[in-house]
Image 1 (tube, each protein chain N blue to C red):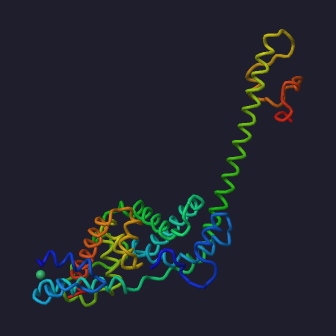
Image 2: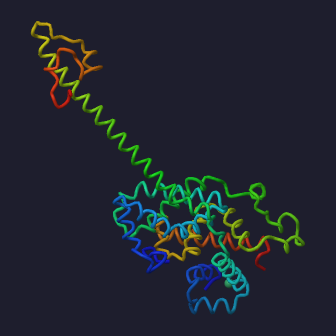
Length: 195
Length: 138
Ligand SMILES: [Zn+2]
C-alpha cells in the first residue's frame, strides 16, 4: 500500500486535496475523506482488535483524535501514515493494556477456543476456519508484536513505513515483526491449522 | 549458514526472492525446510484470510457522528472564547474602575464605592457613569 495514494484512484479529488480542504473546515471534504479511508482503517483495526465492537471503537476514537488534531497536521501528503500512527497509539492505549487473551477470555467473548488444546485431536477437524484462527492467534499475542504484523501483512507496508508509524528504530521493528510471525506460526500449529 | 542465520535471512527475504545462501541451506536442512514452509503458510493465511466487513450501520453513521462531534467541539470552543472575552472585558473594566476610583478616593467627595460593588457590578454603578469608559460600560 502506498500511504500517500488515495484508496480509489480517479474517484475525485486526491486525498491530499481533501485533507487540505478538511483542514480549512470544509465539511464535505471531511466526509469524503472519511469515506476514502474508513475501509483501510477498518481492516487494520479489525485485525488489531479481534472483534467488531472493539474495532468500531478503535476506528471512531482514532478518527475523532485525528480530526481534532487535523488543523495542526503540517504535511497533508503524510495523512494516512499520520492517521495510522494515531490508530496505533489508540490501540496501545485501549487494547494494549489488556493481557493477551487466555482460552477462558476467548470463550467468554464468544470466540471459539482452540479445540486442539481443549478437546484433543478429534475436535481438531471441527476447529473454526482459518480467519477465526488468525483472530485468536493475534488476540493471544502482545500488542507490540500484533501491530507490526498487521501493518506489514494486512496493509503491505514497508519496514520504513512501519518504523515511522510505530515510532521505533528499524531494527526493533524487524525484531518485533519476526517474533510476531513466529508467534502466529506456533499458534496455527497448535490449533492444527497448519501441519 | 547456520540454522539461526537461515531463519533471520528467511524473515528478511519473505515475500521476495530467497538468496542463494537461503536456498542452499533449505536444500540440505529438513528442519529449516519444515520451519520455513509453515512460516510462509502462516503468513499467507494472515494475508489472505477474510477480514469481516465493516458493519453497514457503523459505516453509515461514522462520518455523521464525526461531523456532529466536530460541530459540538467548534461550538464549545466559541462559547469558551466568548466567555473568556466577557470575563476579560469585565476584568479590565473592573481593574480600570478600581484604578480610577482609587485615585478619586484620595479626594473627599460623594463618589465613593466599595471595591466589592465595583467588582460585582462594574458596568452599573448608579451615578458613576462618568468613570466607566464608554467602550466597556455600555
Ligand atoms: Zn537449518
